[in-house]
Amino acid sequence: MKRIFISVIFLLPVISQAQDSTRTLSEVTVTASLQPTDIRKTGRNVTVITSKDIEKAPVKTLDGILQYALNVDVRSRAPLGVQADISIRGGNFDQTLILVDGVKMNDPQTGHHTLNLPFPLDLIERIEVLQGGASRVFGPSAFSGVINIITKKNQPTQVKVNAAGGQYGLYQLGAAASVATKNQSTLLAVEKIHSDGYAKNTAFDRHNLYGHTTLNLHRTTIDLQGGWMDNQFGASNFYHPKYYNQYEQVRQNYVVARVDQQFSGAFVSSLTGSWRRHYDMYDFDNYRETKPSAINFHQTNVWDIEWRNKWTSNLGVTSFGAEWRRESIISNRLGDSLSRKKEVPGFFGNFYTFGKDRDNVNWYLEQLKKWDRVTLAVGTLFNMNSQFGNEWYPGLDVSYSVSEKLAVYGSVNRSVRYPTFTEMYLNSSTVVADPNIKPEKAWSYELGAKRFTGAVQATVSVFYRQTSVAIDKIKRPEFTVPRMENIRDLNTLGAEVSYVLNVATLTGRDAHWLQRVSANYAYIWADKKQTNFQSFYTLNYLRHKASVGLTFRLAKSLSLDTWYTLKKREGDYQWDATTPPQPYATIHLVDARVSWSRPAYRLFLDCTNLLNQTYYEHGFVQQPGRWVSGGVGLTLR
Image 1: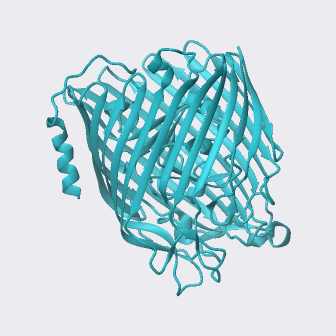
Image 2: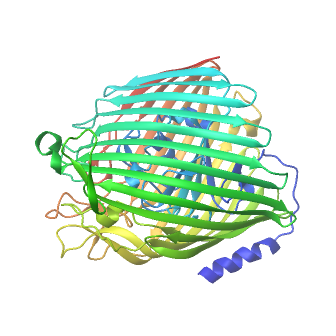
Image 3: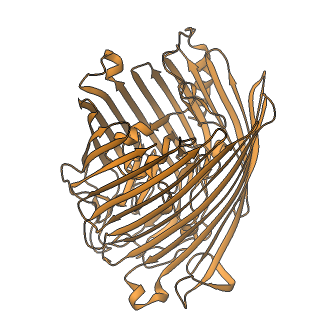
C-alpha cells in the first residue's frame, strides 16, 4: 500500500497538461506545511472556518463550531466548552494537536484539557482544520490531525460588549477593548459563562481573561499574548455512570512571546517562547466534604522554545529550525515519588507527592518548491525524547493544478504520539495504567481533488492510516477493571467529501433568499474488531458523520442559519460489568440561529437540539435537550 501511494503521488505531475487560467478566487493561505501555502495548492485536505462562519453559527464556544467541521468528532460530556474531546479521522481525543497562532496547547496530563482555552469565540479570525498525521511539520501529538486557531490581530480602536442568556440559568457576558496606533495594537478581553445546569450536578462557572499586543518595527515584529481561564463544574457521572456527585475545577495560565525578524528579502527568522500551566482538581464523589485526601490534584507546566527560519532561493523555500519542549507534572496520583512533597495551594493538609519531567527536542527541515502547475513540500523531523528515544518522521505533500479551478493532490506522512501522564500512571477503580506503554506510531496516506471557483469550494479525498502501535483503554473478561494497553496493527480507511455553494455569488443577486449551502460527509472503516474485549477509545469512532448548513436571507440584515448533523458511532458502552454492552444510537441534531446584524450591533436567537433528541456522546452522560437562548453584541468606536 505504501509503494502504491508513493508511486501515484510522483506520477500526478505528468498525467495532465492543462494550462492555468485567470484567478477567480482570492488567495487563502493555510499552514499545512512549515510555510503558509495557497489552500488550493496544498497537498493536504484543510478546512478553513472563518470569523464570519463563526458569527452566523448557532454556537457560543469553540467546541460548538467544530461540531460542524468535516470529519471532526466532538464528544461532549457537557456543552458550552465545559468539557469536550476533539478527534479527527477516527482518532481519539489525545491524537489531535491544538495550536493557537501556531503555539502548541495540548496538555501532557490528558487530552480532556485540550480545549481549556481562555479567549472568547469572537476573537478568532479563522480556524484551520488539517486532516491526517503531520508530525513532520508540528512534531508529536499531530497524529490524526491538527486544529490551528488564529486569533484576531491589529484590531482598530474600539470597544465590544456582548451579553446572552437562556434556559437553565444560562448567561454569557463579555467585553473586549482594543487600541491601535501606527505601529502597535493592543487588545484585552474578559468573559464569563454560567449555567445552573440542565440536569442534576451539571452547573458550571467559567471565567476567561485574554490579552494580546503587537509591535511593528522596521524589520521586526514583536508579538505578546497571554490568558487565564478558570472553570468549575458539576461532573455528574462523567467518568463512572453510578456517581452523580463528581466535580471538577480546571484552571490555565499561559504566556507567549514571539519575535519575527526580516534579515533580508530572502531570509526570515522567528523565535517563539511560551509557558503554560494547567491545574486540575477532580472530586470523584463529594470528597471535598467528607474525605479531602481522596481528591485528585494535578498541576502541569510546559515550557517551549521554537526557532524557525525561512530561506528563499531559486530552489524554492527552505525551512529549518529546532524546538525544545519540557513537560512536567506534580500530582498526588501521577508520576514517580517526589523526594520532597509540595502542599496543594488552597487545600491545607493536601500534598503533591508524585511528579514527572520529560524533554522533547525537534530538528526539522522542509523544502517547498512551486512550479507552473506543481507544488511540492518534502521534509523530515528528527525527534529526541528523554523518555522514549530518538526517531525520524519524514513526509511529502504534492499538489498538481489541472487548471486554475481544479487540483489533485497526494501526501505520505509518518506521525507519532507520546502517552499522556494519565495513560502511564493513573491507577484507580476505573482504570489500570501502564508506565511502560509505548508511543503511538503510524503512516498516513491521502489522495484527493479540490475544485475552487468564485461560487463553489469542493473537496473529495480518500485516506489510509497504517497504525503500527496504538494506545487504548481495554476491558477484557479476565480483568474486572479496564487497562491501558498497546494495540498492534490497526488500519483505518476513509473517504471525505465537502461542498460549499455561495448561491448569491452564483446568481449575482445578493437579495437571493437562499444565500449559502455547506455540506460535508465522512466515512471511516477500521479493520480491527472488538473480539473478546471492549475498546473505550480507538474503536469508538464515527463510522458516518454528516453536516449540512443553510444560510437564508429573510430580509435586509436579517438571516437564518440552520445546521443538521448526523453521527453514527461504532463501539458500545455499559453501565457496569454485570450489564451487557449496548451500541451507541444514531444521533440527529438540528440547530438554528436567527440574527439581525448591523455595523454597530448584532441581535441573535439560538435554538440547539431543536428536535429535542435524547442522546449520548460518552457512555451514560446524557446531553441537554432543546435549549433556547439569545443575545446582543455592540461595537463602539
